[in-house]
Amino acid sequence: MHFRNKFLSIAAVTMSAMMAFSPVLGANAAEGMTYDPITGEEITIEKYLVMNESAITPAVSFHYEVVAGEAQKASGSNLEVYAGNDGNTSSGLPVIGTADFSYNQEQFSEAQASENSKIMLVEGANDSVELEEDEVYSRSSVSVDFSNVKFMEPGVYRYIVKETYAIDLADEKEHDGSSMVSFSFDEDMTRVLDVYVVEDGEGALEVQGYVLHNSDDNATVDKEASYDTKGNGFQNEYNTRDLSFTKTVSGNQASHDEYFEVVLKIEGALPNTVYAVDISEADASTKTNGVNTEAKENQSSITTDADGNAEATFWVQGGTSQSITVEGLPFGTKYSVSQNKETMGEEGYSTTITSTDDDPDNDPDNFTTGGDIGGGDPDEIKITFEDNRSGVIPTGIILSVVPGAAIVAGSAIGLIAMAAKKKDEDEEEE
Image (cartoon, rainbow, N blue to C red):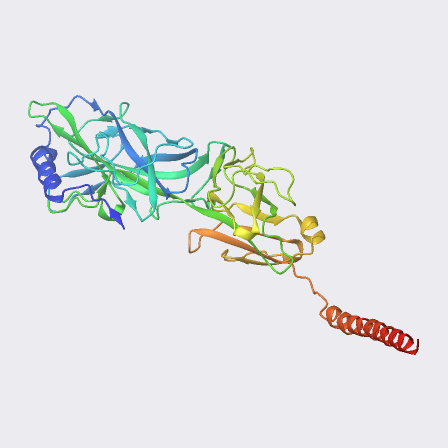
């Protein structure tokens, strides 16, 4: 299922924009007249962070900058497009904030109603977010404050909004679009923001509205232009993948009720973050038996330290093919999954390791595997330890014992018969 949410109504926005702006945007002040400068207001653009439904929203902050756009003459209309902060028709640049997401922030599985951001939208519009199947999103607002920007003439004032970098709030490290592998930035990291200033018909200026274009390519104010390519923000992907491991046992000497120790280590995940662990395919608390005399607990989450590292021990039963799944590990995370080599060696097991990792580092001699969390199909790395313990039972023992026993038994019977016969003969002689 693919959600594509086009929140703009071309006809409605085009008509309302032209009716509002066209009659007055091109009007010049009467000869000798000077307008009193006006200032804008604070608006917001939206930031959408899309992720797999198994992922938890991370604590992350996205940063932006605003610069002046280029002046141009709108084709086919009298609209004048000014470069923001050109010193003649306007002065000052807006102050832009950040898009801050908190850990485990609310997520949505379908587009929600857009919040009132003062960006020109049709009433009742939904978030302009695109979701694939099994995806969810969180949203954050970015403030753009025009209260210190002065406008002196009617016209369209153009600004460029650029997404510059992101900061993991847990470690305060900066990442740009190429180095932060756990996040996919928009291919075009810029938006064009136009401010429409009009004359109110009584010799004064007023800000009539704000329009955000998805890119420079469609940033047009032509009368004939459609408004279906306008937006209200940015969308990024938080890239994650689940990691699961399963244990099976085989062989005539394998224990089907024993719980085996498996150690998971991760490095370079998001710092100070809790990752959910699905233990529904294993036992939350192991059972005591002839091999395991002490019950063990399987934890339902793991928490990374300030460096994004964590280690956890799990217990799985091979005879029932139990498995453990760690959910939503970000791209770039390194991992290793290891069985207890000492125990496996003492009990005489050998292992075969299979993995759906694109480039796994399997080491069956040490009962371990590892790799990097990265893109792949499916969205889960599945690891299986196939452990075997077989014993050779000698097959000649019973066959070699039976003939010997038969000979002994036959000899005994013969001796008894001979003794009985001699006794009879002795009795007849008497």
